[in-house]
Image 1 (tube, helix red, strand yellow):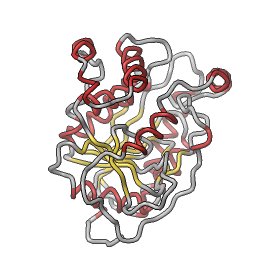
Image 2 (cartoon, rainbow, N blue to C red):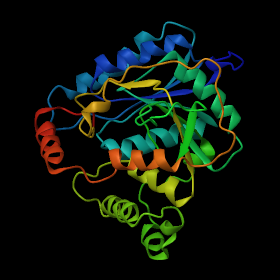
Image 3 (cartoon, helix red, strand yellow):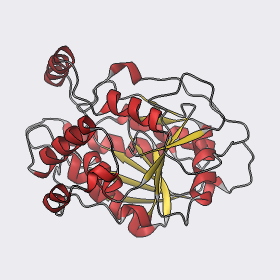
Length: 310
């Protein structure tokens, strides 16, 4: 990919919690671009977890120690634990209150150097295109046939290493206050032909809106913002970010963990901004469709024996 963009000028937000070993790896990956501005957000420790305050402190220190170039580091540290959903929302809102566009990395999202070049080019290309809500660095799904271009448009966001604009994040509402009206309006039919897709999405949105157990999240609210506003999300055809958070509390499918990363050369852009409905269908079935019973049982056991990132 051509180096015609000043990648170092792209602001980066790193969100950490209690895993200093992961935080260090992600921060060290930034040496590939040496960003001039780095935003660091950390949730506070949970009162019932002895030693977690020290882990949070070590995670923040790991990021600062990894930055051995000239860089302006801004921090937002919570004294008490807000939980994954609310903390991520506040961290990203804080980030976009300071910058017009930028990259968001959680402490389990390890980007390749190519991801930063990918993000730089597309952040500029679609800066003034309101229907483009975000771009992802993780290729969770792919088409079987060789692609004619290097990224696709779908309705669903993938937030394992991503980038966006202030204008799109402004549509985010953590509390989803207008969800009852949206559900009654039937507008979701304008976006999705499949009754099964509509039913499942409304079910998930309803669980988030009513704060159902297990839905301390922020990414479903972001999904709702994208769907409600008819947004498009960019998905690369090569994987540019590897999720190293095998012990995370919200991960559902182990098959997409630790995916190897690849690189683009010259980025091939789609000729039009049309949703790839086939890819969208695959993405929905893998990520949002109700998992089989054995997967749900495994995930319950996994949460019992892992610390989690939130």
